[in-house]
Length: 179
Image (cartoon, rainbow, N blue to C red; front, side):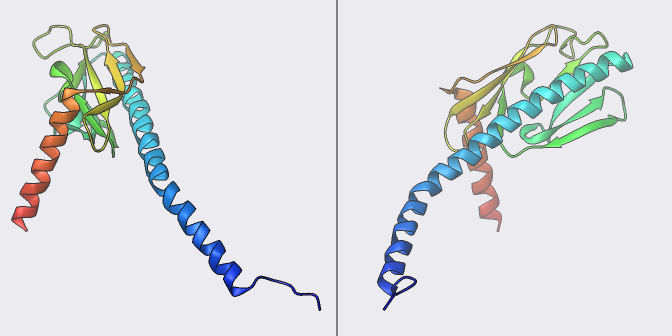
């Protein structure tokens, strides 16, 4: 007699093997998704900086790219540097981004496309796209005083990423204590 299909034992063994393999790939999949989010954030940040610079030149006015609520990790807005802070574009973000001293909260572009501090001095700095858990910078978006932007993808420990991690855990503890 010819038999078709699988026995119950064969099906259970197949499910057990599949469960083991899937448990091994789960962490790899999460890391892949996090890596894609970091890369996407770095590319969108470069695009935002270039768009802000282009708008400043095209409008012949100062344009500012700001982290939402002074936090690049929440996203950023491109605004005119006027009393109304007219929003030209807004982008949300899901990766941790930390800026060094001169680009900690915002970047200003003059009508000539140069990155300038509010005092008029040249503005240059690095925005680090950090790992979700840990003091590691995966991508560095580098702003030159001329306003040009470039990216380096060097995985390295970064003190700014550690500071951002502590600030976020402090906010999480504060919000948990309020509930």
